Structure formats: structure tokens, C-alpha cells
Length: 191
Ligand SMILES: [Zn+2]
View (spheres, rainbow, N blue to C red):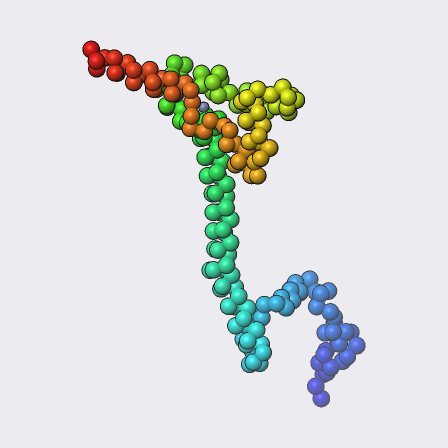
């Protein structure tokens, strides 16, 4: 007759066998439960297969098409904003705010150049003061030029119409310089 094995004795040996795994020092950490939205494998179930194909197609379309489209749209929007800012900055530095003529034209034709023009001839603040003067003066006290400007401003329907009284592409300094050079050339040609 053989001696009974320890497992067959029951009692303490059986209790050791049924200890919970988390109490053992060598027990592996609990595995995270799989995400319910992403299937782990293709099942034989038709609905599960369709779901897997749909999820894979979604990720492929998102990664290769939609995300690139969104990134392109955002990049082009920022590029347009940067271009507008650069254009405004360039215009502010190289063109007269009142007559919109280029800086090189004044530097070439009038004494004092562009700085003289935007400080004395077409100073934007002078035009602001003029508009304030129109508001602060009674209609009966307007001069002829003030009456014309006031009429234009009152009848303007759009913002563009309000600027029609400004000397766009016109400057007395340029006109005088052009006339002076033409008369000089004419006088030298006559001699
Ligand atoms: Zn000007």
C-alpha cells in the first residue's frame, strides 16, 4: 500500500492550490481589457467582419486622406493670413496711404523724397483732422471744398464710395515736378 500524495490529503494542500493569483508575488499584472471600439481579430461572425472592415477603412481614409486635407487647409489658411500681413506691411512702408503712389516715384521726382511727402503733403493725420473739422463745423460755415467732401460722405452707400474724394493716384507735388521737368526739356529743346 503506497503513501498518499500530499495533493490527495486535502486540507492545507488544497487551500494553497486555490489561492488567488493576485496574492502570489510572481503573478503577472492583470491584462487591460481590449478596447470595445477596435476589434482584436477577424471573427467568423459576419457583423464582426463588417465592423472590422469598417474600422480599418476608417483609419486608412482618416490617416491618408482626411487628416492630410485638414492639415493642408489649416496650413493654407495661415499662409493666406501671413501673405495679407506681409502685403499690408509692404504697402504701409512703400506706398503713400492717401494717394497710393509708390515710394520710388517721390524719391525720384520731388525734393525730400517719400518722407517729405507723407509728412507734409499727404499726412494721413491731416485728413483725420479734416474729417473731424467737418463734423465739428456747421453746414453754413463750410467752404466750397468742404461742402463737396461733406456731400460725397453723406451720399456714400459703401465704404469705397466714402473714399472717392481722396486723391488716389494723384499728387500735386508729382504733377508740379512733372510739369517743371517737361518745361525744362521744352526750353532746352527750343534753344
Ligand atoms: Zn500721397
